[in-house]
Image (cartoon, rainbow, N blue to C red; front, side, top):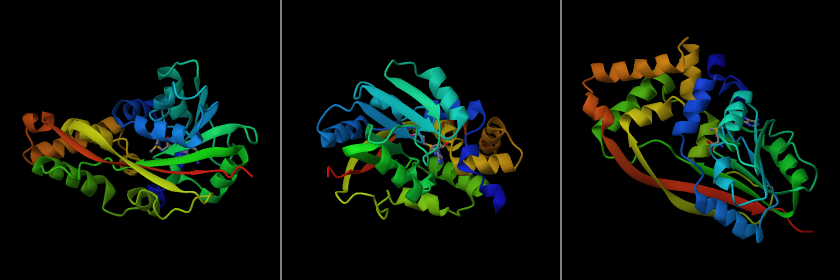
Length: 270
Ligand SMILES: C[S@@+](CC[C@H](N)C(=O)[O-])C[C@H]1O[C@@H](n2cnc3c(N)ncnc32)[C@H](O)[C@@H]1O
């Protein structure tokens, strides 16, 4: 249905969503930043983080490269990043994965965290090949955010409620790529490597619901229903309370770990 498929540019309009996104979304694991630098074999001079959102992933690169540029198609995400993260080595611009804001052979690393499944892959990979220096690294990171591995009826009830209200179990093709950790995605270079680290998350049910409100699928549906993000959140909590969820249930914190996968490859040197 058209109402469920706005252009990716539209996913993150509304700064309350971008700020919420920055506050609640998990960050790029530092181990992956170090693995990429290790693969490159020297300190990167110029690192592009594409689909950077409000800088959630990009902030983790600070200190590991001389210059870092976050690029996102959503002006709202970029505005929140520029307002929140002020470091000399770091800047953010609005731009598209299909037209990267960098000169030919000028970039040491291109990363995409939780976003490449939105991209036009042939166009993006062509751009990556244009901007990367020979030997430069392309790194794609994915992780699952839901607490599906938590053995808690309360969390399960909440996840079901979100699915019923806002997702209705139809996973778009894009989300499938993500849930498979990009394992069936063909990269533009042959020396692909898959690295995995464990990401520990500690969230209350309340935190989890806040995170759910930042999912593009949930957000699209909320907007199609004519609700604001705040109203969407209130709607879910009210349903859960009516289903017997107590204040205490909402505040109990659960800790779990799940894999974060880095898929990387390097542009051939000759
Ligand atoms: C799920 S968010 C990931 C943000 C961040 N990298 C993180 O780790 O949280 C996906 C981001 O990709 C951006 N995006 C989607 N399509 C894009 C495109 N064609 N070019 C650049 N960015 C795009 C969206 O605006 C959104 O901010």
